[in-house]
Structures are given as C-alpha cells and as structure tokens.
Image: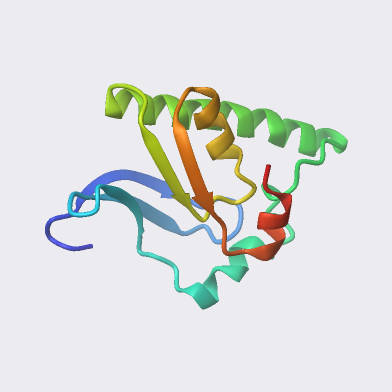
Length: 127
C-alpha cells in the first residue's frame, strides 16, 4: 500500500485461502484496489477451487440454495455500502468481475457498470 492510499475495508476469503485482504482507496486513480494484490499466476487457485461456486448459478441441493440466498444478501449489502459512500449513483468498473453478479446488482440500482474478467471459465458464465 502506498502512502497516499487509504484503507477502506477489510475482507477475508473464508472459502478458499483463509487470507485477509484490504480494499484501499487510491485518490490518484479514484479506484478501490485489493491489497495485497494477488499475482496473476496465483489467481487460478481462487477460481479453480472445488469449493468456489460463485462462478456457477446452479440452484441444486440445500447448500447451493443457501449459498444463493447468502450471495443475494451480500450483493445487496455491497451495493448499499457503495451507494451510501458515494452519496448516490455513479459509474462502476469491476476488474475481476466473476460472473457479473455484483455488476448486475449495481445496474439494477441504477449504476452505469462495466466489467472485465480474466478467468475464461467465469467470463463464459457472465450474465
């Protein structure tokens, strides 16, 4: 993290790595960034894990249905947090957008959204 960047939010990956990450605000770019930023060659461990199901929307089985409910609740919280922090609607760029669920939720709230996903499997499933 550079001196001019501000800690914004702490998050933990409970599903795959048990690692903690910070979202930091970079005023120069007006972006929130993940810190530490995973190296490109390390990203596959998050996406290829058997436990990582956010790149699927299957609704079979109790765990999958529960996961979809928690995901919906989480997306509502994230969009509310961004809306509250920005005092209204704006533009959103999500780099590493997965299947686009977060972008879809933000768009439904009126945001102008754009996203990109480097993982081919996730990008194919994008909404």
